[in-house]
View 1: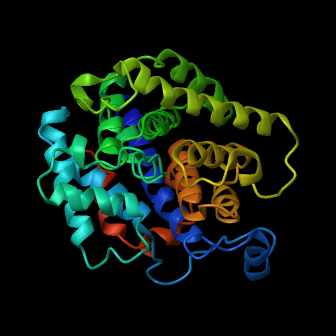
View 2 (view 1 turned 180 degrees about the vertical axis):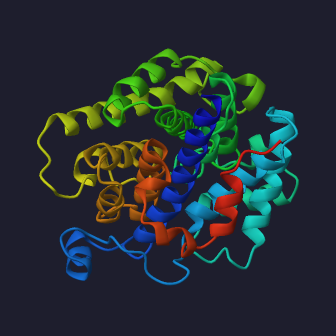
View 3 (view 1 turned 60 degrees about the vertical axis):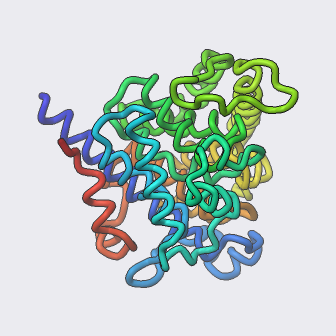
Length: 337
């Protein structure tokens, strides 16, 4: 029985990491296109086949790999152990010649400050809640750690570049959603489970992970700082609930839950795609890629969610040898001592 549980967990971890990369690759060429342009190019069902050998990904997958390698190398899952490794791997990404996939300006600005040796709480872009923080958090959701550690790690990795409280909260919810699905939760149950988590964490500031990040003009307490992030996430989850309560019109999901350029919208719209197409994993990716918003990030997160639910069986068998960084994805999905 123990061996069966471990095998299932491994398959779901692989399915989630590969699913993130697959969604990223399918959404890469559709980002910045209108839905009409996407449908003219790929048909009404959107892109459902990887293009190229290898099929190239964007900075979304590259930075998820950076987080995964930091976790892989960490001697312990504490802020003191993980922060220098996140910094090292983020800076290696920033300096890499492969960092030519239209990376987000927030990540580049923060990495430039981190490279100078600036404390991360000062290097971060304090007012940014772009989806760059939660597009890369999936590896944390796949760890076998308690929920407090999961939350601390998720918020820490977000905070190095995106210092807005909504970036922190949305990253934690994204990692928690991956954890729930990996452990067998039904996709349809996620909105309620995530809403309950957001309400329970509404005033919890994780000082042991975040230090003095909360100190901003006009903010009186750590709880006041973090509450804004949870409130905005709750608003996004409420819009997700409203969208799911209505019949699916087959149109752009961004019209209901947002275009995904900011963290809480990326989470909500990716969940909408994953839940609407829970039994058609490739369809979930195609739906995320057929949007007028941040198509690669939405499809990547949808792939991480559906892959965590179904494992590698969700995906066409030949994709695993054609996706860029396949060797790293395989290594990082395997438990290590």
